[in-house]
Image (cartoon, rainbow, N blue to C red; front, side, top):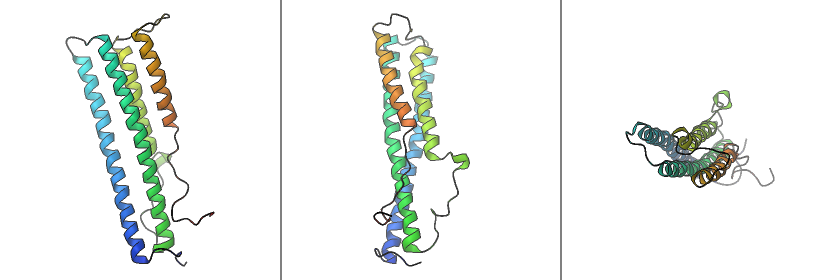
Length: 187
């Protein structure tokens, strides 16, 4: 197999090294967030539950909706990060295949166990965290759902529906990329 016209072997090796660095960086960011999001959520929920004097219902509801919305934002950003990582891996595969003429880290990597990898695990963790935040006002009795919802209940319901829709859409977001920059046009 002959390499495609493009970068020389030393240039391809340098690009490949940069891609590997980029992949490590995206993974590092993901792991830090995956440590932080559940830890902060668990700590905050524990603090809400074990308080001797409960917080006012409005404050509990506002705090829970804020936390759910922030978690959705982090989730959406993390989906972009996962997609970027997939793109970097595809690019590295292309370099391995076309320029380095050898199998490397990416062409020979094993499949995800039971087709559950980084993206699927993150989707589960973020979605569960968001649902827990949205359920917190109900669980702590800060919001009572009644046939005639008014004031705080209306705000809670409206925000919960919006946040839930964004979270559900995010769970089904595609993070895989089908092409890489080393592919020939039209190939």
